[in-house]
Length: 135
Image 1 (spheres, helix red, strand yellow):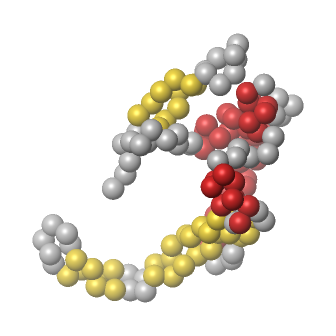
Image 2: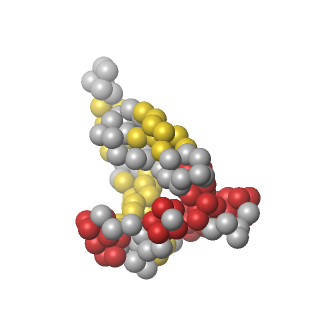
Image 3: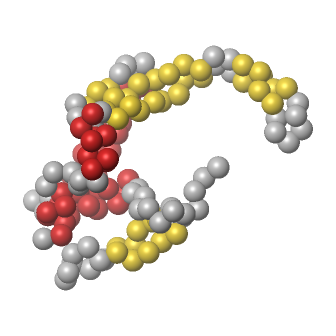
């Protein structure tokens, strides 16, 4: 079951305009890949937007490729991506109650690193980003 998304206007930088951001039902801000690219481009004006987009796409592609090969991807201080295997099982069709075979599958899994967990629990922004965005 997905989250219902709503949108609100956010003006982070005076004189720089604003942007529509998506929030979930609890009012917390969600960030999409395109919003990540926009924020990185805004906080790194020496990089072209197309270059930032290429960097983000390359990082995601490399992580995806490594996981598809069954490798573990560790980003120190951030976390580790791994693949977990789910055994084949017999499931149930929720509508009819009929038994349905479910094949074995691989599921991507992320475990947050210690530094990420600590920052999230303190509510502290990532080093350097908040200062540049609000300045």
